Image 1 (cartoon, rainbow over the protein chains, first blue to last red):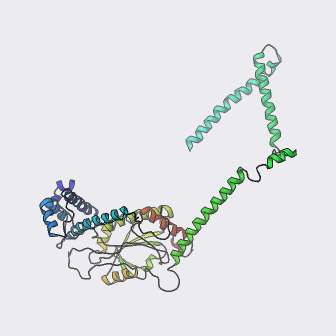
Image 2 (image 1 turned 60 degrees about the vertical axis):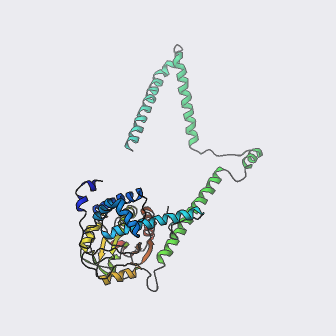
Image 3 (image 1 turned 120 degrees about the vertical axis):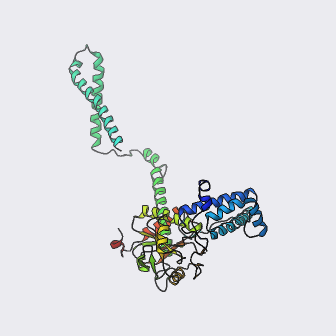
Length: 119
Length: 301
């Protein structure tokens, strides 16, 4: 929360003319992740899954979570914002698919190397 | 440790003290025994003598070890009732069996690792890896020859990576530290090769990597050279060849750690599903398997 109460909320991180991070350091990444989490929390509150792919989703997002979205854009590279927004949809669908497989009695095992016997 | 020892010494001292006093007492009252008046001490005198007698007996026995002597048929029968199986035999059997099982299992794992490690050796071209000519994060030339003499852990990534590469690089530094703990300091070299040479200059890489681990070496180079390296390592990547200054884009790329042996040959690929501890164990096992004297003696500390 510290990031938003300080000046960072108005200036955001340093970016190039194209909207990429000037320096994707650990601090800058942490700022971006925090802004993303705040934005996603707002989407969760308003039951919005997709904030990027459909026109309806974009409009609903702008109406309900416009402010957090702006902070998100300020603190992250634009490409990261798009990536995380799309990832949210993909992750949700992935979870759904896993639940569906598990409900029907299937088991999901991460691919392992033939040896190594990881414990 | 020192506490234990000092404690024991103290206990010994404490134990010795009453022994000495009682000995003196016995000596003092040996004469007293003769007088019938001091019956109280007589009893103690007898006890002492008895004690001495027992001691003497023990001494006599200690010179030759006691041995079973089966005298009668009954004794032999009872002894052989249980057959040749007794507790000692059972413990020996289980112990030997368990030991053999553990040995064969570890040997089997070692052979399987050896098979994996050597599947890319020998005749023909290696399947993964090959010659490259790049620049390290200090601006020095770095080629495949710099991989020789140590195991190397090669990772492909880029600094503008949103979430996966930073996570994987954190994992890499954990793995690296664990392997060093288990195998020594100078056996593994962690390397990150960028898939995004347009933005990742040596300076950028150095700044970026020192936040993960100061020992990770960042490699970059001309687009064509990076492309060739990626091809050799079977790494897919999607960096556009010509980018404008300040352009914002992401690079899609394969996420694997490639373990290369001290001869520069590919050993094993480690995917994202492994935790740092699991990966470190795999790497350490391979390093411990390495028994060739080549360069190990001269370059490994």
